[in-house]
Length: 88
Image (cartoon, rainbow, N blue to C red; front, top):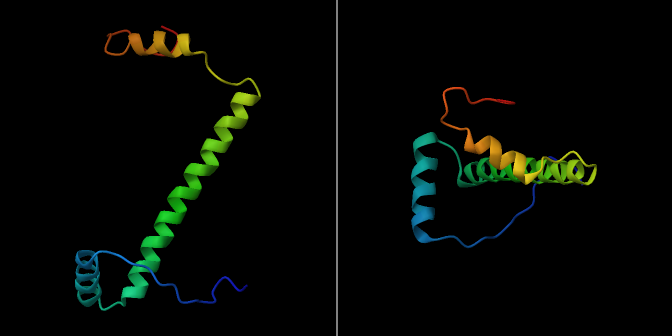
């Protein structure tokens, strides 16, 4: 499928969101569809980024690159100390 090809999608959203969307569309001289696609793009980008980074973190854990819980707790216990910092 061509990435720029469009297809109709039907969704149900609250009446209040439809009113908000219509107000935004009128104020910006854009269509509902344009705004919905912009919002969906932002959502998909964020969720894809999160899934990629979770997978990367899990891969690092499996490779033994994790930090033991005790080290994290010890570091957090120093937060707020004047001399706090990595390795202090």
